[in-house]
Image (cartoon, helix red, strand yellow):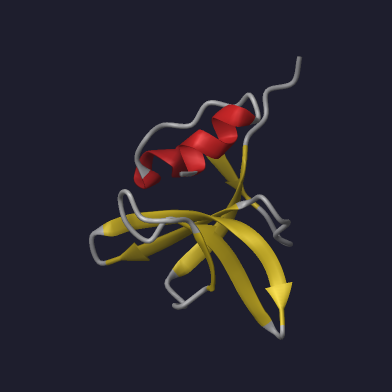
Length: 90
């Protein structure tokens, strides 16, 4: 899903969530549209798009599984980090 959205914005991202990390940089204050990476003992396993903060919780747009509808959910784990996609300057 993130690859498709960013392609519509004219940006290239690799297919896998773990590869997408390499196309991002750390941020102090996340903004809507940043990428939310979820990780476990095997590394990054899922990515979504940061949807902002509401009711004291951070929210993410993501596709729960292949072929499933995109949903907006509260971030469900502390095992995540938020980064911004690198943009090339022209």
